[in-house]
Length: 252
Length: 152
Image 1 (cartoon, each protein chain N blue to C red):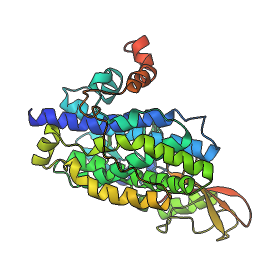
Image 2: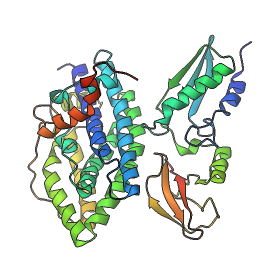
Image 3: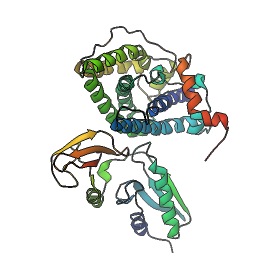
Image 4: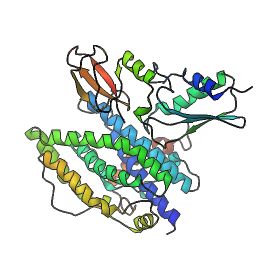
């Protein structure tokens, strides 16, 4: 694998995570339990789509002059490099916010490291995105604590959400050849090096939320290397890419 | 004779932000640079939030305004580094925001006072407001809700 090939994979992983999660979160638009939460989710989705624009634009440059839109709308499920966590269906509001928290915690640590990347384009995107993600994490942590340490009903739902999502956490910390190449180039940290900080951060918030972190380290994998996505991604893409599939090349 | 950059900054200070029209794009701190490159005017703009839908409208508004002042050869460039911060809001912009009913950003992370009645008894309703750059607060004295310009 050449350095450019690895760099492209790395950028797709970053951009596909924010694209797919941004789309998932946007599915709540008009459906959230209260107006303030609806607005908050839509704003979070907007930030994530904005970050996607930056990551996939750079990926497109490396990939022979494609645009971010080309990459978002003209690839099929097997070309996506997002972790499985971000493609699982929203479930209830509690599960959506738990997923957001588990992702935000990783995202904030990852972007913090990328701000000192040897590639100044990566460092610039990370610096910009990091400001937004700090805010996302503050909100998702508060909500996880509020609902976890809330009523009997909300506590039970948050524990259920955590138990369901926990097996999807491990994939964010798996290292492979792409990561080894990025570490060698000084572009990114090894994902496995982020785990300790992640466990400390997540453990602190979950304890405050009176939730029990599952002990199992079993991890569903196959998203970030594209080997095997869940069946949910294909369904998501049929909606997200509908216009380009029905009317190829349509613009406005 | 071509316009001086001082003159151009003045023209840009008359271009309103599309979402908060009481302040200009210069007040908002998103115009980072104006310079002549031979005969081409280059204007560098930075987005507030990466997904802010107003960004492309702002670039269009800047272009329209400058063309009306007779500048034909111009290029609007986007730069994300250094990342925009609310520290770049001008004092004039901060005063206008408050007058308009939006509490200006504070390093403490919350509004200093209610922009309507001036009371310090305020509470947060939601971390997000009507646009990515604002949060939703209310005053417990006059009971009016208001937007707070988030500090980033």
